[in-house]
Image: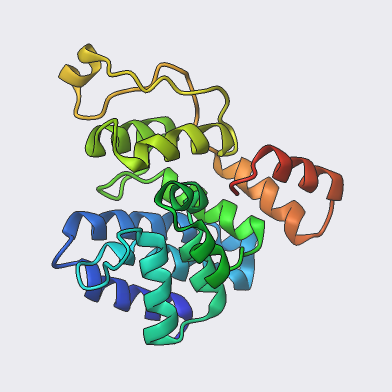
Amino acid sequence: MGHAEWARDLAENLLRKPLPRRWAHTQGVAARAESLTPILGEEADLLTAAAWLHDIGYAPDLVDTGFHPLDGARYLRDVHQADARICRLVAHHSCAVYEATERGLLDALNAEFGLERPELVTALTYADMTTSPDGLPLDVSDRLAEIHSRYGPEHICNTTKARRLLPKVPGCRGTPDLGLRPKALRASSVWSLSVPCRSPTFSQVRDILQKFLRREDLHGQRRFLDQHPCL
């Protein structure tokens, strides 16, 4: 049994009944991750496994700190002795470092789980932030707007994720305006951000990953990481 197959069974067991919408999102993220198989080759199994497991820290039985990347990664490490690379990806997915800072958990996060290779973190961020809560493909700006709407403007997710992540996902530019638009709210349960921002395309992610995997364009890699420090 590969990592991904094991991870799917575990995530389903933890999420499907208590958190059906979270389970739907997880299935969509895993599908996005799996679509990168032609690029990642053997490492696609690792990324897909992390995608299945990235949100298990929300499972009621796993909640400890209330910070789901850390709770999920600790569970994988301590209970299942999971591959350390999967634990690192889960612990640091989608700019978790910023929310950890807000929660006073940055030292614990970094002490227990180092950073995984940037190309894999980039790929997992792409999969997570372009998938709706119902598992459907979604533009990253709409995804952030949905998060903001679901949690409310004062929630810690919204004081960190949108401001930090939107300019740092490949293909996104500008600073989001998190003000509510009443007309958009009346028209849809998902309200929009005022700054146009397109999600990272498959070709953009493909090009980034291929350069990393071929170990080419070292200056470009360094420049990319300087521009996108949370990845």
